[in-house]
Image (cartoon, rainbow, N blue to C red; front, side):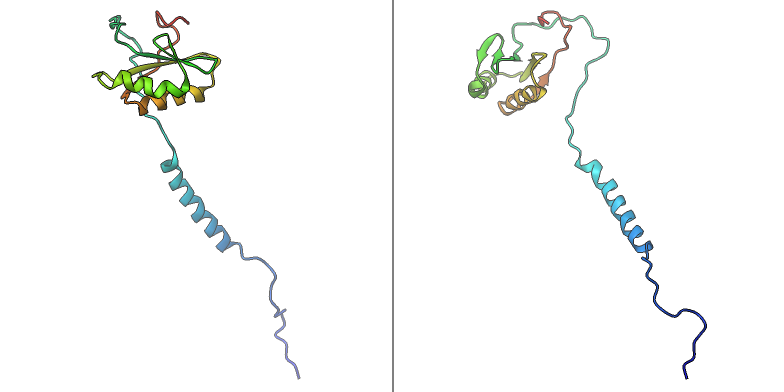
Length: 140
């Protein structure tokens, strides 16, 4: 004699979604908290929007130009990529002001300009400036 309880007493074949959603929400929160710390940034000091007309002495400024042909120019002196670091190191070793201005040809990839900035930083430069396009004497 078999008794039945009146309902289907078998197992249900439904997926329980609640634990999966809990795990996904925890992962989402972890990634949202971790992403801001993974961002790399470069500290930038922007110039005053209304600059004064004080003219700095042009003779002691070092300008590194990134040329389209793959060479570099330090104050109009042509330098190859292989000798760039040693040239900058010799200039900045005995120099109290470790400031350089980096200009790139408009058609040069920005990667090469950043590489020039990295080499400059490795050669002892403390402050790197990028002159705007419309500065007097920039030649552009």
